[in-house]
View 1 (tube, rainbow, N blue to C red):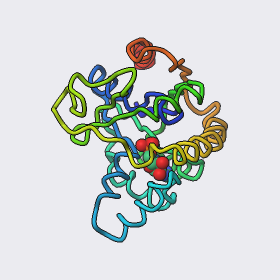
View 2 (spheres, rainbow, N blue to C red):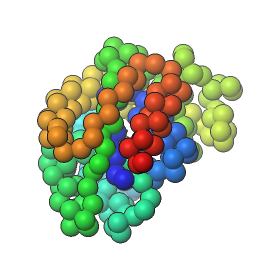
View 3 (cartoon, protein in one colour):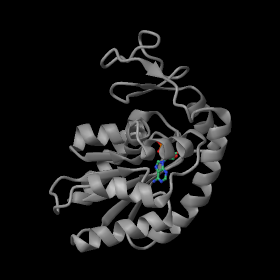
Length: 217
Ligand code: AMP
């Protein structure tokens, strides 16, 4: 099964994806992580990606599609896969469908995490991320046990470059526009799971695990 998870930044996609990876053994591919690693490279590509990402703009489709398709497993894998942050535009969705069709595969499930924009904005402003393992904390609602250090591996916690107020507003505005178009694109093509994400992460996780387990039966 290939599933995609959609929702505004800060709706908990990364947190939920980690649960689905641990509890259902899904392979997790997050375009933000893939692009952040490209951004960190000392190459021309790295410089281009950095310019778009740090201002909260989308990286051009051509670059994003190439990087993601390069790391998607090619064989009709028996490993269930979860895509987070990709596709983000209809052009990306079309490119992905084309590549999957060639392999005899398709997107089966769309998970939509639903949360009010004011809620996610607040979460993004206090989000902290582990530099080593990517675990996500919230300095107000879910702080680490030791300030500045990851509970899991002691890694340094940092604020993402694009979690500043201007970039947050820009990213959410882009998300609103693209999300409507993507939902229209996938309407009727995939099973659509709508999940209330304005709740404790554990409650959201239990619902998602139940729904995806049911889908596989
Ligand atoms: P995220 O970690 O999903 O919030 O993504 C962080 C940033 O990476 C976004 O603001 C974009 O600059 C870039 N990005 C992530 N996914 C995509 C995508 N599918 N297409 C274009 N840019 C993306």
